[in-house]
Amino acid sequence: MKKILLVEDDKSLCLLYEEELAKEGYEIVVAHDAESALEKVNAGHFDLIITDIRMPGKDGIELISSIMGLRKDIPIIINTAYQSYKGDFMTWAADAYITKSSSMDELKEKIKDLLKD
Amino acid sequence: MPELRKDIVTGRWVIISTERSKRPDDFRPQQVINPDKENLVFCPFCSGNEAKTPPEVFAIRENDSSPDQPGWKIRVVPNKFPALQPGPPPPKKTKRLYQWMEGVGVHEVIIETPDHKQEMSDLPEEHLAQILQVFRLRTIEIEEHFHHQYVQIFKNKGKEAGASLSHPHSQLIATPIVPKRIKEEIYGAERLFRNQIRECVFCQMIKEEQVSGERLVFQNDQFVVLTPYASRFPFEMAIFPLNHSAYFRKISDQETFQLAKAIKQALSRLKTQLSDPSYNLVFHQAPNPKVSEKAWPGIDRYYHWHLELLPILTKVAGFELGTGYYINPVPPEVSAEYLKKEIQLKS
Image 1: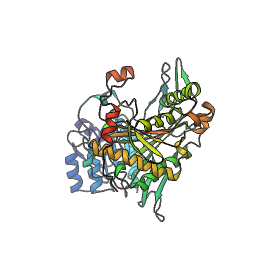
Image 2 (image 1 turned 90 degrees about the vertical axis):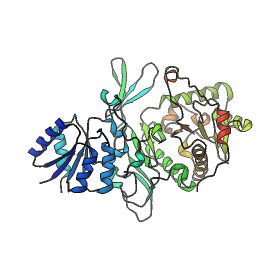
Image 3 (image 1 turned 180 degrees about the horizontal axis):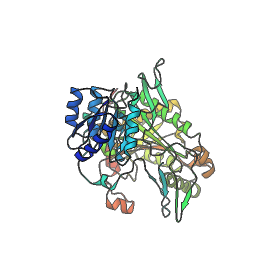
Image 4 (image 1 turned 180 degrees about the vertical axis):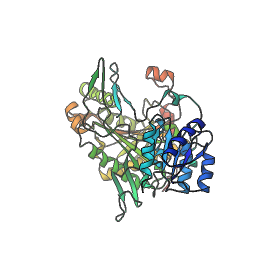
C-alpha cells in the first residue's frame, strides 16, 4: 500500500482528503504543520507528500526545501488555495502544483501519475 | 492562457495572468511567507537539481556534459509558470468597447551561474560577458518570429525588487505588442531627431554628460555609466554604449566584455556604497527589427539601446501613481558624486 503524507493545517479538509484518498487504497498520514511533517519524514518512509503552502509556523515552501535537503526522491504535490505562489521559483522544487479549487479527481490523477513505477 | 487587455484611453496593455491569478483572499495580510529565503536548503536553480526545471533551451556547458545535467556554466530554461505562453500570432480581438488578445509570448529564465551565492557583481568579467552573449543569442532566436515584437530582458535582485529566489538569475519576456514605455522613448527620440537636433538624442546626451562630468559615474572605451539628468529614483543609473546602435542584438563579443566591465562597476558601486540594496536591471532596446523596420523606418538612426539600473530605496506612492511624477529626494549629481568614490572590485 502506498503511503502518503498529507500536510494541511485545516483539520476538516484533512478529513475530507483522508476519506477520499483512502478510498483509492492509499495509506494517509496527516501532519498539521511543517515541523511535525519533517519529524514524520525523518522517522518513516513515504511514497508521496501533499503539502499546503500557507500554514502557521514554517510555510510549505520552507518545508519543501527542508524535505529536498533530506530526500530528493519523494514526489511532492503543492495543494494550495492560491495560484499566486507560481511566481515563486521555489515552487519548481515540487512535482505538481494544484489549487484547492481543482476537483478531487484532478488531485487523484496527479497522485496516480506521480506514483507510477 | 493569460490575456492581454488594452486600456483604450492610455493605450497601455496589461497582462491578466490567469495562471498566477490571485483570489481576493490572497491580498489579506495574514502572515509573511518566507521572510528570509536565505534559510532554504534546496534551490531548484543549483547544479544537480536540473530535473526541477523545464528542459533547457540553451546552455553554456563543459564539452562532455549532457543537457539538463550538471556541468553547465549558464543555463536558459522556459519559465515553468510563464507570464506569457508560446503560441501562434494572436489576433487582436474586441469585446464591445474593449480590445484584448491571447497572452502569447516567451518567458525564459537565464540561470547565470551554478553557484548559488555568486552574485552578478561578483562574477568574473568573462563570465558576465558570456551572460550578455546569451542574452544576445536568445534575443536573435526569439525575434525570428514576427509576433515576438519586443524582447524584454531584466533582472530582479532582492526581495524588494520582486525576486523570489536569491540564486543569480535574469529573465526574458517576449511580448506580442511593443510596450507603451518603449514606444514613448522611440516617438520622443524620433520627434527630436526629425524636428530639432537631426541626430540621436541619446548620443547628444552622452556627449553632454561627458563634457559636464557632473553625473558621470564610470566610463571605458565603449560604455558610459551615469545618473540620468531626470532620474526618478535615488542612485538610479543608466548604461549607454558609446557606439550608436538601436539594437542590443548587434553588440559584438568584444563589446560584451566592455559592457560586462561597466555593469560590474555599476553593481559593485551599489553594493559597496549602499550596503547591497535590491535592484532591477532593465534592458531597453529597439523592438524586433522585423517590426521596427515597418513601424519606425530609420529607427536605427535615432534610437539608442541602453540599460537602466534601479536600486529599490524608496517606495512609489500615491502622488507618483496619480500623476506619473516622481519625487526623487537625492539629486542625480549627488548620487553620482557618491557612487564615483573609489571601490575595490571582486575578481
